[in-house]
Image 1 (cartoon, rainbow over the protein chains, first blue to last red):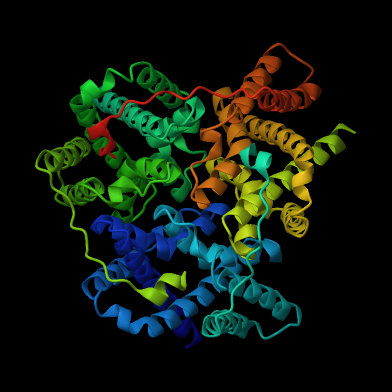
Image 2 (image 1 turned 90 degrees about the horizontal axis):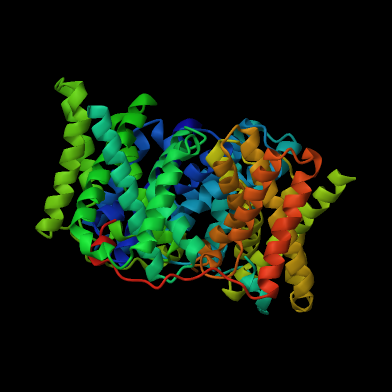
Length: 213
Length: 213
Length: 213
């Protein structure tokens, strides 16, 4: 039962990440291939970077054809129904936030499996959840959105901290992943609902340093 | 004989990829080091990403000094003869297309060697052929050209599909690589000759989604 | 004694690289998370890419919590004292150049440990020293600074060449790393002091090639 639920959230997350890639790519007037690649990278970029960093190779999406097929189908669907989808933004937002929670937990668990310290595991969770979007934005020549707006990665980090807190207090292991996933979802959901965001630091320039590297 | 031919195409492909990097970098007014790095990344970026994704490490160009030397020599030649080279665009275009075919087949074969599924092998072939140019464009702050114009990656994908079709019908294994290479070359060549390109999907915006990730 | 000195330089380099990331990120008006990530990537990006290319995985910063903590503390300090730090630009520049030398030597030594050829080892040294800044600039949507201005990577390359020259003439092995580190530091320091830079090649365009890849 719980496995089925998690698998469902995995798929919903992948689907919405891919859809968000399709729309970002269409806005930049990419051709069909460009759109598919951006959909792909948005959906699997975070997990791919995580696997490359930890050495869990070949990266996960190469080991089963299922994820690539789901992404391909989502992208095709998003292109075909591109006029209808914007009406379902709220639903997509919920799937996207659920996906964020799921991928965060997935990254943390991989870190634990590799025997890495909690701090690194939280970093891996955040990378898994967020860096598909970061690579998408780099390819589309935008400064990554999550570096500028709203509480996105922060939700992953807080979720990660709670994960290890729950581990420490011997919380029922069977439920930690679900609890943390929902927590990340909630933080993300509420921060958008109440328009919360991280502070921007007023800058001073560092002239010679700027030339430095 | 066939080995020599393939090796020759490998070298010609590497040389033209490096030259295309030099010219892209000069247009952005990079300094000498910048030009060399872009030449390098254009020529080996695709194979490097493929090796990092599959875990075939250290990446190929680290295992022999030959490829780096060929790239260095090509880049030096391209810089010295930068006024003459534009007269040989047709020749360069043919070498470039041959290189695309060769690198695609190389990627597919690596995938097969690693026991990956056909879909993933085709992806690896496309990555090997195209992602040097993608990373070049990211570094030069452009949206990757192959996401916007002409049939480039598509040639790799079609070539890859034919590769596995030929495997399935028990086509003479000794010739599959050469046939597919020439096919990718031809698709690319004819698509430019007849100005074919992939459709651009007219976009609708997905406002809250845009902010999503 | 020497070990302590090297460790100190490692830390000073990491700290200044992180600080330079913080200021670059503040200039682009990133939020707090964006600033931390850019600080992190500037400090560990070069070594991370090196480890991913050679297959020394999980990448180094995952294997000890010390480096992430140093970066976090540096970034926090840089944000808090952002109005004061620009007064210490000369000191920061010296630390940064020392760090460049240190990271270059570290990369070369890793290459040697992996049994790679001298040319590749020098490339790894240059990547370790410079590519944190390159990835930072890609994320901030700038063309990498080191491709356009001043002698930065060139200092690493010259240092690397001297390293293998010294190895060849049986220079005291205990001192090679320190000598090369100081050499990279000096080249970098003097090139800025005397405003030296690499030539920019006047460009000719290569039209059809441009569309090529």
